[in-house]
Amino acid sequence: MFKTILRLLVTAIAGAALPAHAAEEATVKAFVAWQGSGQTLQTSVTEATFIGSISGTVYVETEKGPVPSGEMICPATVRIELESGAQTGTGRCVMTAPDDARIFADFTCRGYHLIGCNGDFVFTGGTGRFEGITGGGRAVLRANERTLTAVGGAGVAETGSGILFWPALAYKLP
Image 1 (cartoon, rainbow, N blue to C red):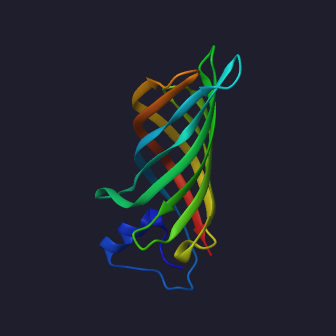
Image 2: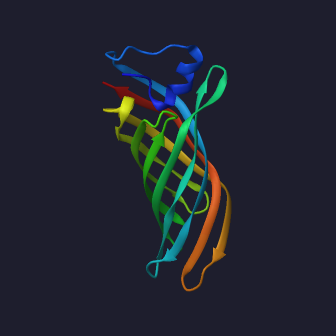
């Protein structure tokens, strides 16, 4: 199989590609500088729920610095405890390479509202040259800017930006 999305541009720069029959296994350091939006609604006396998405360019760190490797979008739901601000989140992500090959992943995390969360990012499949991808790693999601706008009733519209960072994202292709 060909290189994964996380090594796509590294491979292009090096001018090398694996043969179609070769298995590949590697660990990379990567990040997404994301933009996001959604809505937070009070869903019980003690809890609120955020529903929205984040998206941005995936960068892989190389010896020559970060290299853009595709685009990612993650629809997400986050449950927020109103008293403590503790949150748990889930997202379903798709990474799309410039050649339209895709990687699908699930993201779960715990943290604090308006700050971010840490958790697991697990590859669930792929298309094209990413068919059969497995792996994943720990992920750190941080927000660095948020805008909150009341939308009436118990709701707040949110827009923001931040970073999603994978210190060691492992993958395997058949």
